[in-house]
Length: 361
Image 1: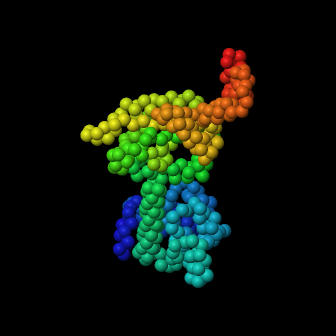
Image 2: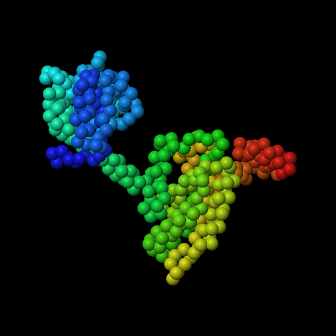
Image 3: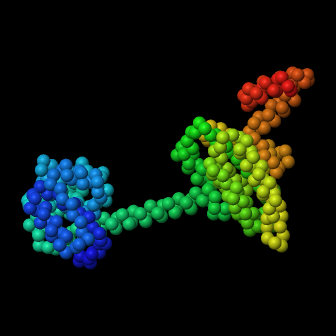
């Protein structure tokens, strides 16, 4: 559909709201006579306008300024949130300048005197212009939104591995995206590739980047339900794993370590084995915060301290600290050391574990 250089794609759906039946019928006949793909609904009062807006979307609305007990500016103020980008053209038999001003201030895109509507082209041209401008605005908004999503993806995606980055994790954390689930617990697995600096130093950063990409691909192959994977920075990766128990996270980590250690990294000229160390901490899903990250990092540090290529948990960190504290100070009997250990470790043990520690230790 072309009108004075304005192109509008069919089909077009219009709403004509006028309390004069003759005007309504004449307008519909005029608008549909030359354009078979133009559909026109009619409304004679504000109730019918509300009903039409509740059930259909329109490309343009032609609204009589005085529609029963409400004026166009009052109607537009009431239904603006339902119109979205739909343009409204106000018509009136009155030439009072205050009506024109009130119509335009109310949010309508145009005003047409009724005496100019029936020449066959004036109103139709105005409708084409209004629809074209509205659809252009929608197109531009969608382009902006798409570009914004693309920029956001660039900001949240690690360019080397294709995984989410730390910025994305922090954004989700600040938006409280990790909702509480009483059936599951959230586990954080902090992973660090062993001796990665030596790989960069001896084989070059290009090989180091290739190792990171290959490592991320293997990790992605092992991804399970309820799991989100991040590149945390450098050679560190972070896993959010929402699952029933710490055992699930531990088993996944052990299986992943075995698969990685069975892979050969590097090119065919010089291949080598890569291992990693891991730290795990679990918590209620509502407690995901930076404190959990710190605990997972301490568990990872313990795994490195104990020889690398292994997995440690936050509970193991606590146990290690308790044992070191017990070793300090005066000499005690084995029973005293055991009782001291059980007492210090009680908050991290369940009832059965406490019973076995006391009765069968």
